[in-house]
Each structure stands twice: as C-alpha cells, then as structure tokens.
Image (cartoon, rainbow, N blue to C red):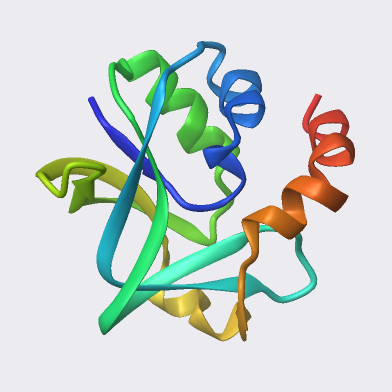
Length: 131
C-alpha cells in the first residue's frame, strides 16, 4: 500500500520509528488540499481546498501491520482517507493520507506548516518524545 505524508511522517526517521519499518520515499504532491499548522502543536493537518496543493512524500510497500501502527500514532484529529497524488514524474498514484476530521478544522491555524523549520529546530526532540 502507499501512504502520502506531508508532516512529521515525511521524515524517514519518524516514519521508521512509528511504523517499525524503513521505506524509500519519493516526492509527491496532493492537489486540492491545503496544509496548516495545528494550534499549539509541532505538526500539521490538511483539509480539502480547491486549487491548493500540498507537497510531501509517497511511501510504498506498507502492509496492514504498519498501517495499524500509524493509525495508532495519529491522534483523533485525523482520519485515513484514499486520495490520488502525483509522484515526481507527475503520474497519478492512489494512496492513503491522514487528513483532519471536519470536526477538528477549528484546531488548524492559518499558518502554513514549514517542514524545513521543523527539521532544523524540532526533529531531534520530536524523535526523542515519540520514543
């Protein structure tokens, strides 16, 4: 199975720690979704937004066990949804994604999430926090 990740899980070290497996990742884009920071958190959430796009990575080869671990890791803010993303060669690929539940949209700020900022200033401590 494929999983599109746009937040902390796009960092291979986080993905490996949470899923228990190592995967190669390729750049991908999810159209018609926007990514914002979750209020008072270090991670983002996405919600549908016509005309917007969210950059991230696409992992392939996940099994049910790994998806189960990821489902447990993701908070109740999210629901796993089937989407179509474009890979680096702009080919459409069906994948799962964790998107914000509509009842949690009010937890999102209007600030875009910055993966470079997270990686530079918070990745190390985040990895320690998730075990």
